[in-house]
Length: 136
Image (spheres, rainbow, N blue to C red):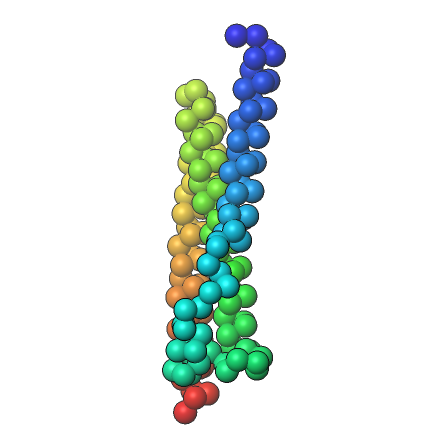
């Protein structure tokens, strides 16, 4: 296998990886039923979970959604790091330095995922507590 073949394979892998990453962010926006509520909006309004139609959402709902999106994006980044570190580990060829770097990156990413989960639980508990206090 010559150098040109190796460069071609690397280019194809980069294109596939780029397509995968881009599809993670674009595919959810292609959902066909996103505009249909099937009565769920009215049910949420009746139960007090959502503001009535035409009014602005409650500030705590906006903040909770923003925090949720940020935590989700960080989680996706950490997942990609874990996959990339595993890929690097598999291709290390027994090189102890590469294995150690990959192992450290996986451990740090798993710790990061744990921190994200703890932060998510803490934020949900805090907003539940605050929302119950403001309702009473």
